[in-house]
Length: 94
Image (cartoon, rainbow, N blue to C red):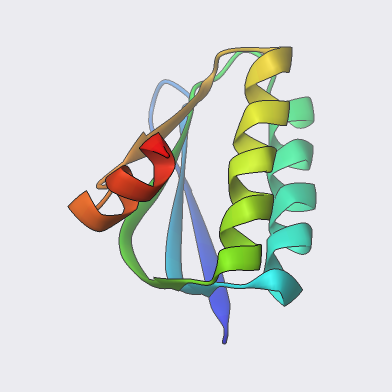
């Protein structure tokens, strides 16, 4: 399963990370590293992770992704999710 992340920055300097493909065990750890780097390099901006074109999340990938969100949000509440499908919302609530 492949995962592509495209980064865009708006006029205010806020960053949107557009994820396309799927999150599995293999790519969830590199994704965490990229998100940590973005957060460390941009401590005052808002970071939105857009899940609109995310097709698949494997169980081990989901575990690491949720853990990543928790880790990054304990440092600073600058991370947000956008376009989360109803199926993913159910899983995130669990």
